Length: 264
Image (tube, rainbow, N blue to C red):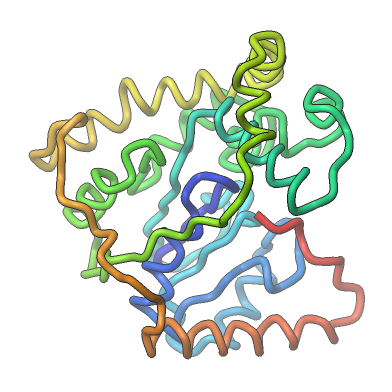
């Protein structure tokens, strides 16, 4: 089973499209279960709801290596931590109505501090995150998205339709540009994301190059893009999305369920 840990603001929507378009109704979007942390019980329910389940993705797959997944193929995409935090902050302002400063938002919200380490390790534990990321079957980089897909195409246990349509949310980049132009704000972000920065460095300098060279790719190679679709009206993708809406609706009636996890 393909298990994709979706790091918010790390090209996860485009990557998830590939899984949805490949597997259709056999793909489960894990956050629809309404659990902030996808559990073994959530997995058991998902396997009953999705006969022949082949793919699982979501930002609530915290510490995914701990899930009792049959024949797992673990995947994730990482992004430069400071750039990710700035992008997430802009999203919180423009789409979420956040009126706090950049610095106060980082202090207030867990998802702005070492979030990639926490998602992978299940705790703010850099050494565990490094050990776990080395066990992932595929680790890509948002900054090298198409090269990452070429790498995936050479290591996947079964064929995937890697073509995608890049999802870009129209927005005014004023917020992001103001933060990026402020050295003090960037230093503050680096200070509170030191573990994520070290994990990203480890993947950029060690894990990703080694994985590329293992399959005959250079880690800085220029490769053809898989961004070939001009629309997302693909029957398998659409039927899969519809079935996931049914899955989500079913969980609104489960007693004791928490509110949906924050959107990515």
